Amino acid sequence: MDTEERIVIAEREVHAPAATIFELIADPARQPQWDGNDNLDVATTSARVRAVGDVFGMRTTKGKSKENRIVAFEEGRTVAWLTADAGHEPPGHIWRWDLEPLADGGTLVRHTYDWTGVTDEARWPRHRQTTSADLRASIDRLATLAERQ
Image 1 (cartoon, rainbow, N blue to C red):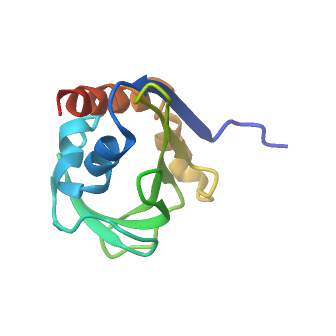
Image 2: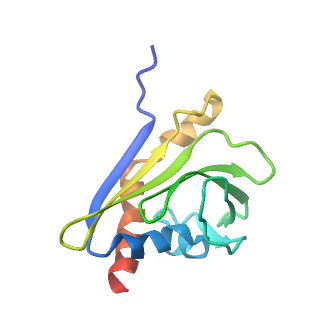
């Protein structure tokens, strides 16, 4: 039986309203500013995501084009997407953000990397490289941006 953990989570409280944080996440043009892996170069589509089924494009720092399909969406609270190389089927990993408003005006931010849907074992070594520290780096950068606004 395979007991490998394929869901990686990081969270922290951010001293900014959920709506402010959500705008930074839901706007593809802002994502390179808070990407803790320094993997994103520029958004190739400019539309803010608004619903399940929306697709936004990104170009990585290595020059690859990515298509990201929204698979979960609740305005101001949750957004998640499947990532794929442009023109290809998604391999099955999901990036997810959940925002929980707190009584003090801050927000509990939870970032999840879920690769339970990746069935191609040849891809597993790459997915194993994503750690909670990587996710936390994105949350920390996002916090810096949100707390300045």
